[in-house]
Amino acid sequence: MRARGRSFRCLISVLLGAGCYVPALRALAENDLKDETGKVIVHYFVEAPANVAAAGTTDPAKQVGVIVCLQEHTEAPSADIYPVRMSLKRLGLSDSYVLLAVKAQAAGGGLGAADIEPIMKLVAWAQKTYPVNPRRIYAFGKGSGGSMAGQLSTLHPISSPPVSPIVGAGQT
Image (cartoon, rainbow, N blue to C red; front, top):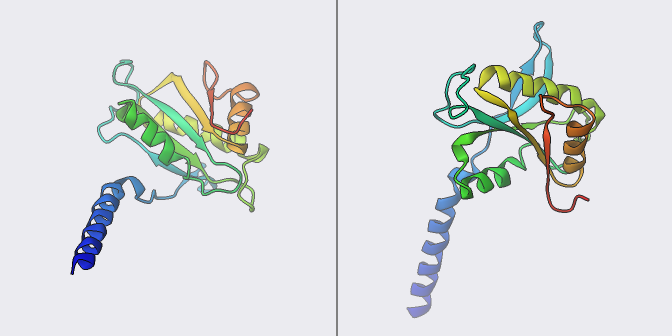
């Protein structure tokens, strides 16, 4: 009887703990950014604050930043949104940033040179859709995603001033 009670309490603890993470683990919907002819430019994932101001807002206090989350090697495209979201939450900045993730153009899933132009177009779309402060556009990645963040920020600036890289662990 005692072992059964202990097992039951353990099961309840696990279920309660898992329940706390369900909202954080929700799946993001994949979207398509299309050109004027309807051709898909890039598949992407977006997570925006719930009560964001209208696009075109010029008041810096009401503007948001953008963080482009770039996956490592062939991970799921939205894999790095979760750690960025949790970091922003810990800092009390959850409502201050739009998070974007792109699906690689290559069939194997790794990000490369072919992804730079679609990422630039996705950031331009975000700037038209949300009240983005052009001085708060960042690229985050670790491993090959960190390499892509560096390329975006140094070789292909997508804002003025250029995108700032946030390189994760494991990138030198």
